[in-house]
Length: 304
Image 1 (cartoon, helix red, strand yellow):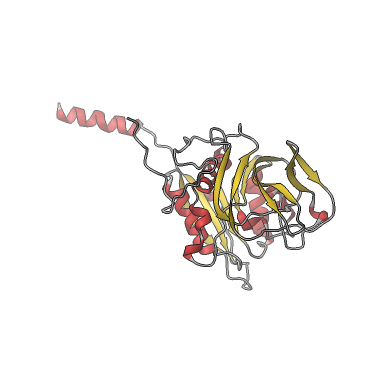
Image 2 (tube, one colour):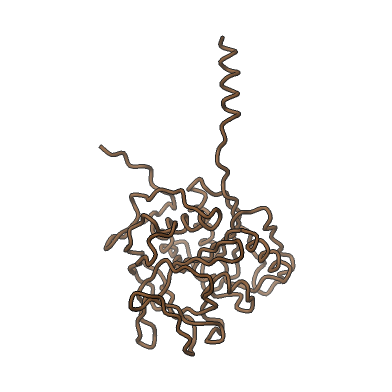
């Protein structure tokens, strides 16, 4: 009898299927303005600790070294995360990546990763908007929120601005998208660089969230901070939140629960087209900042 029960238990176990983790590659390196190593380790912890992702970090050669040896195999992954600020990838890698995304691969672009590779048109199409590195009206319109609508502003001018790091309020402009659905529509983000005056191809975009910033010309705008882009069959999630400074004490922007949750939800959506995650009880809200210093979701809180 005991042997029969063991056999039945083994058969039942063989029939149970556990969801496969999303195989994820982080492309990182070469960013002189950000602590890319610590930032990428934080991103890996956020994704790994959710138990939804299995993450590898692939670091590029150092700035000035040949990029020819850097040949990621995108076929092994469902999702590619850019936390990168360096030289443009070589042509063969660019073509492989374009095919990966066009065929349905997921992409996440974090913070300063909208700045590099300005000479790679398809990457700029995937990012939607960019900043600095000589970008201006030739690269596309400014995009911002005004009078309850998105404005595509083709006026001439430079691209890219941020002031001193500070906490700021994030407002969801699309509350029905799977990434933002169910989350508080207004929430406080911890101290971070707030990018402004972004411009680019701005095609096939869905704008998710804004934050208000006044640039060096004294003009304030509700600037996009979270958005998505469709590229072929692929999905791209962009978050310009998540600055990491030059030592371990300066990645506090990534400790914000709002950054971590939107990263997790955006990553799952980019890889699968859906979000299965519940809204966590520690997500920030209006006038409330929430931190996850260990980059780990809280345990479920038991209700009385």
